[in-house]
Image (cartoon, rainbow, N blue to C red; front, side, top):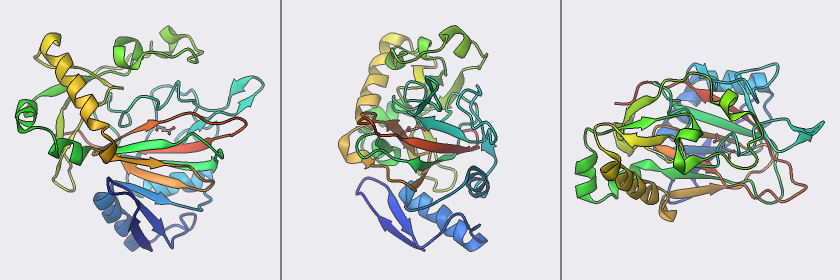
Length: 285
Ligand code: SIN
């Protein structure tokens, strides 16, 4: 197995491994270490069935599912299907209207957000549909000292319901009943705005415009400009790796120190059909 950096900001390509053959413990440890170092790992040319992707993902922890079952794989609900393919007039998977078009780390509305996720491309468009990933260690380390001091000890409130978040409103292609979709009771979560990665010990900025809507103990007059400053800072181009999907890619990223975003713009008749698995994490500290 070889691991080669693909971008100054973050990300490495891993070659010399066929993930459909269950990797041994040494290979899993090497992947863990590569993830710790590079935050996003790209395995090209893979061909994993849903159960094979589940089995590989489980080597890193229990799997977590989204709160609603829309877009889950009908036979393997640990797999979320992301797709712009339509059958009988309906999308067969979540489009960016339901997943991914606002910068975020996965499932931070939960008390224990996901530690990492994997996306595997079963079909990839010739043009468009890229995913951008940003490095939240660097984002934190490059904040002005005064902002870093201000953030120490502060917690942000993360909510799932887009209707409660002016920065992540529903788009015109959200074609379900929003009251029903967001009616599932999900308690908001409070997370430190700067978290310490439990494996590397490094500090990472831990907010995103998709989920963080307010700051505990601060009124909006103070909190919203601070959030705006952080959201503008965390997506600076020098923190970003932009992944162009190819058939067979499997991308594994660490949700504890990165954020990501679906960039859209798939050129018709391109089809982007991806399987996502998410691995359980622990409570941020
Ligand atoms: C996601 O947010 O997990 C999906 C990103 C994408 O569709 O590019």
